[in-house]
Length: 75
Image 1: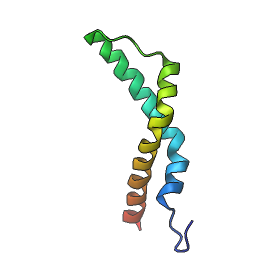
Image 2: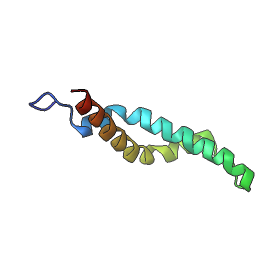
Image 3: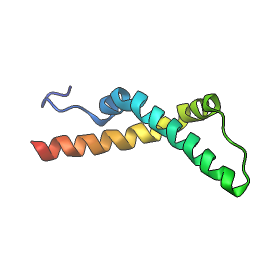
C-alpha cells in the first residue's frame, strides 16, 4: 500500500492476474469453438491456456484500473 493507504494499480493487477488470465483462456477457447462454424479448427484447452499467459497481462492491468476506480468511487 502507499502512504495514503491506497492500493496501486500494479499491485491490484498482480493480485488479479490469475483470474484475468483464466478469463482470457476461457474466452479464447469459446471463441475457437464458435470459429468452427466458420471452418476454423478448434483450439485445444492447453493451447488456450498457453496463449492466455501473455494476453492476461493487459487484461489484468485493465482489471486493476477498473477495480482502482471502483475503490476510489467507494471512498
